[in-house]
Each structure stands twice: as structure tokens, then as C-alpha cells.
Length: 184
Image (cartoon, rainbow, N blue to C red):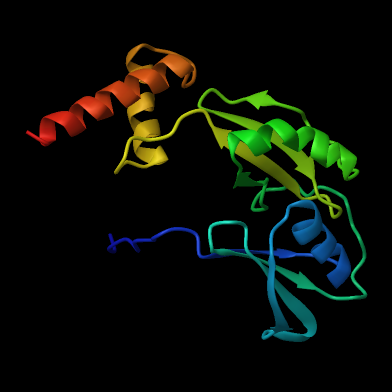
């Protein structure tokens, strides 16, 4: 077996949009992502390539072309993206459903995912997006993924269907205890 390629996070995500203004109105106007810059799509000069900052300094990019139709048909087939989730603060999460409705976007309302809360909605082109807010903050020096791996171990040991609040609490205790014992 060949050695794996080690990734260091998501560099950017590129979606196919429609016209330029629809993309700017949605990504910057509705989601508040700063419009960073625009240049031609270097693989197809008839398309524009718009760049937005989703809040972590990485990029969401959109290919646009003024004559592309606004096809809002969801495309759930194999090999397609189901949805993209964006992280939001608890304060923003609590306002998101109403803010989306005020902007003309129907949404799922609050959905409890055990270790996080979610809200789903579709953009003007039918892409499914999620606004997600973790129910916990990891201890200093740890990541959300490390806490979730520990919570998963705990929930499997108790034969539970999914991670629940008590698994998160016990994972935080276990991680904090490990961190405390390693400081001795």
C-alpha cells in the first residue's frame, strides 16, 4: 500500500454558481462573507471566479457566468455534495432561523444533532447548507475532533445510539484529567 497523503485542513471549496450578482447577494449579503476578490476562471475564460472568506481566512469560491440559468433542482445523486456546513457562534445560531426567513430563505429551524445544533436551508441555486454550532468548547490545547473522538469512545462503551450531552461532559472530564496528569 502506498503511503497516505497527509492533509492539513480544507484549503477552499469551489461551487458552480449562476450569474455574478446572485452569488454576491447570497454569499456576502445573506451569509455575511466578505467578497475578497474576483478573477477569470483560469481553466475557462468565459467564467468568473469569485472568492469569499467564510470567517476562518480560508476561501469559498464560486464559478459564475452571466448566461447560466438559475437551476434550483437539488442534485442528490452519488458522487455529488450533499451539503456544506458553516460554523456559527451560539449567539448567531439563535438568530439564524429568523434572519434567514427575513432574507427570504426557508429553513429547517433548530435541529439537535447530539454534539451540535444545526439549521438547514437552500441557497438560490438549490445547494443545501447547514449552520452548525457545537454544544461544547474543547479544553485549551485540544480540538473539537479530539473531544468528539473521546465522546464517541464513551458512547460506544455504553452502547448508545449517538453522542449525547453526557458523553460530551464525560469526554471533557477525561481529557481534562489526562491533561492534568501529564502536567505533573
